[in-house]
Length: 336
Ligand code: F6P
Image (cartoon, rainbow, N blue to C red; front, side, top):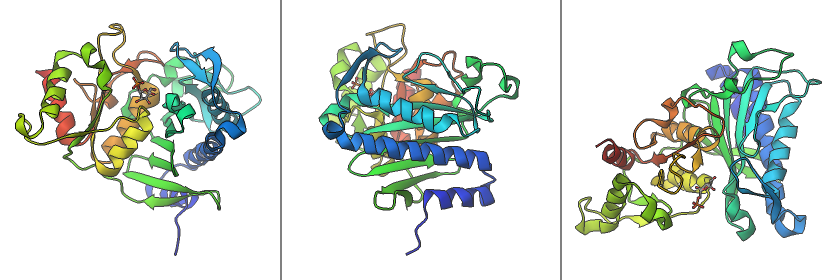
């Protein structure tokens, strides 16, 4: 049986889709780092990697040891290759400057090193989310430190987005803007092998994901919509819906890419100054790019997420993504 590895897929993309060689190299390095993270995650208590660091990230969230380890792995793997002008991570206050001893390249790498980290200590799926942007020419200088403004590009500018999910299998799901491919890690060979050739999200679904414990904080359109979902066959939507919530965006989105569904993390009244919990640059943009490439839809309730012009690195956003019919319905309720 001829197996298509990630390397082969990327080389073929260079030939058929004009994927630049330095972008190919960058994706391979990210994939290698994800293998290392997968290995660290799978060690658990045996590797001494569980538990918290006793520090907080810029969001004021307690950092787990594996958050910090995963961040270090991604930085170290990517800083020396000469393909990046800079990096930004959910775990770091400011953009990461490529050390002066290494050459700089044309791309920017943005990542959430370990998404869903409240799942780590309970042995439930977590993942790494990443996004690649081109560094605008005006910020490309070999000598100066990189201005954070360079990163503030709408999601439509992403040239690649992906995630690795560390679950019963480790998978890498990737888009270069021409569909979505899924690769499963063959642990014996140490390579990602193409196993999901054309991932598509069905237009209709009867499954939704939301943290119901926040319902008292929701805005009226969200409450109305979720009430209708819960009303089932007797309600206005005329069908019974099932609910799932893994509390790791990677895992919830992966399920939606596999069998359809709707993921919601609405804006709510807990912190009125913050429009939602999830991060635009590290979570919402890469996942929205993947979801759209798989035929799904992604909005913040009012507009397409990929069209939002970011104003800061750690900006938050409300997220509704997945099967077209339901995302469009809940978006219409907001717009009304
Ligand atoms: O980064 C945020 C995150 O862990 C997501 O992966 C996940 O969807 C969400 O938070 C879970 O939030 P909550 O703990 O409120 O259910």
